Image (tube, rainbow, N blue to C red):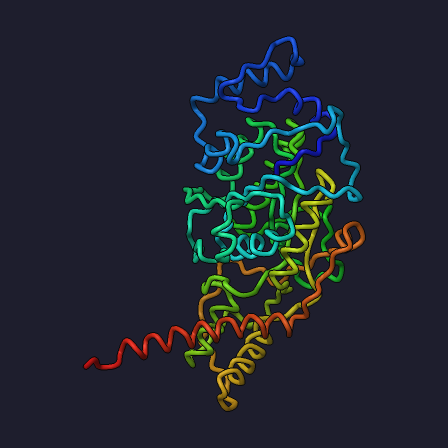
Length: 389
């Protein structure tokens, strides 16, 4: 998530006050820049013809729709002093905003940031849909959707960071990572905190760890104002059916067996998507630049127990009698981490965040959504199959 705002601090304030409102056309006088800044501007001029930014980022180059110039209040710098200062964005770019977490975040935050405009860049893969954004937001003048072609993880992250560095006006980047970068917790009694070493054990986790390293390198080299988020498993309405809870809910509704990897005792901690959105909001507004925050819950469930809970609740929602679970053994993934166990004391102490939705309540709301969708689809199919005439 890329945020532009008028609050300026530190060295970035000196640089921001000199950045032209339209960098592709407005020259920067040599005598107003430091030698380092001038070299950087020359390098960017040479790169401009070779850079290929996503459509949403290209769109941001055209004022006033998406381009936002950092301003100084009364000609003076306003310093960001840390978590006690609330940053309220004016311009927000959300990448992947039509997916599960992204769309829920936009729906959640749109009313809380009433002065912000949003650009949603998404390639619409893995179940993502523009319709995941509620109608009132999609019809608002503060919201723009851009259907882009985004490459995965490392390449996409590097492209975005180059664009941010090129423009130089981004107030804050909230980079979303995962608890998987810590590696398998196994039977660890001590949860992983933000300064624990990264030890990813599968290619996906390794790519996420690589993105973190790249983000930090831009912070070190170019003073990129980032905040990092590592989160537990997130669940809730509108999640893709390839994910465990939606997938197993559909199987329960259809009366089909559940796939079982290994012994079913792999465990995950589950966080309701609204709690996730609120955590991201607090980190975006008050998180400390250059810091990482774990967000998670104590709602840890092994896959077998979760399946039993889900099956029982679906049977009740469908007014069915009790039935025995049926499992179908399937090949396990090449490396299936047993457990991710993280410490999220930091965000609780610094930003006052903690989970507010108990797992039973969140699961009930999630299952209710998928049952309604199933009944709607089933009703439509039944109507289509009726003979005409």
